Image (tube, rainbow, N blue to C red; front, top):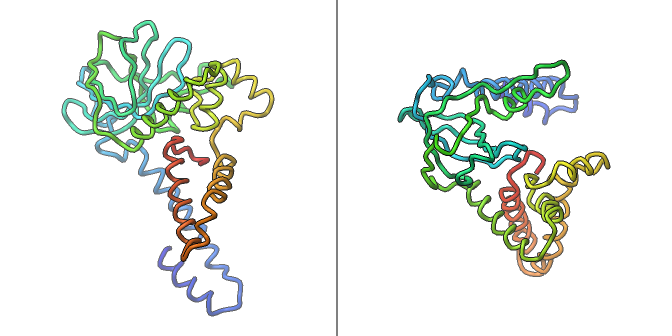
Length: 270
């Protein structure tokens, strides 16, 4: 399809007719890319995915990838399974830690070791009920682990990643904001709008924004990127006065926007 697309593209450039075949092959290519993408992410097609290497009573080493919004009972984390009995694996799991069993909180890139079993995630039991298992499956999470303070070993910080550095920078900003005596609700809203972190927003406040139809404000998206773009465009406008200033300005803006995207958690909307 790609070879045909290149040929048809060159042919269309020399013709005044509508490139019908070019359009058809473009659609075919994107259809095939979608199929390949889904198949590559299917655990059954990944030999080193933990689902294909796990049996009960195995030693599991996992690395924290993301801190999720806690529930009333649990602290929640998304973790990558690095090893099962010393064998390298991959694949995401959900870590649940009961709040009354919290020994220490995890940060992004922290590692832990446990012999606890990988459990199935509860599916919807009633018609039209929210299906949490299906929701997590779409995020690549297929199993969960229920941790208690006596049943795991905190191995400390693993190899640093970009997400780890972004988390550290976000934490530093939040710590600085706490010095300005904002109320908990104000601080959680500022963190959501600037950094895309909604973990600290209370359920009541979240429902208030939802009922007001303003929930999109709390998700860092193209709106926020547009505002930042306008600010950067204004602040860097003096560069246009020098030689190749417009090109330098463009490169700087793109780099700074990507840095912000990493800091804000690389959401799809950003």
